[in-house]
Image (tube, rainbow over all chains, first blue to last red; front, side):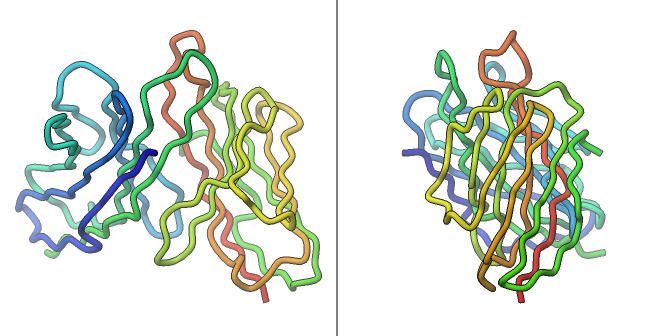
Length: 117
Length: 117
């Protein structure tokens, strides 16, 4: 069975400091990994994904994430946080593609990021 | 915006009412999803449709009835709901895995905030 853990409910960081939002996963075989962000009263917005290739993935708004297979982690990072980055962040995983059909995404419970000016 | 629209954005209904949520995607996708997002709980996948055929029903009560008349439209019909059904209902769409090498990322609508009295 697939699962995702986001160990922190809340992350606080000062504006201008680097931020990290943690995610670990469990899946049979190779994973597809995603990060989404949700602003208040909005749907989930895609940030970045890892499918294959370079372990460091760059996404929208200066975010990046590093796939670490040995630690089964996919932490989200940004070198310099902005107040506007304050939102709810979701990590998601699914097993690598089957020949047909769709394997549903499994989402973590979310981490609330608060960037303080 | 992501190309996935949902109406209405807000809905208040009594337990004896019947209402429908609508989702439309303008991305040329062939898979559509309904999720439920409740406070303090992980995102819950409710239904998956691939090419208008339902492929996933995660033990959702029968008071929720999905309908997918074509690959661009998805409905969620609601009747005799309970107060615990109050939540944000999110629609998403994606390409089917392996479909012509398409991007398989799920894109979300803004959601319908439902309150059941």
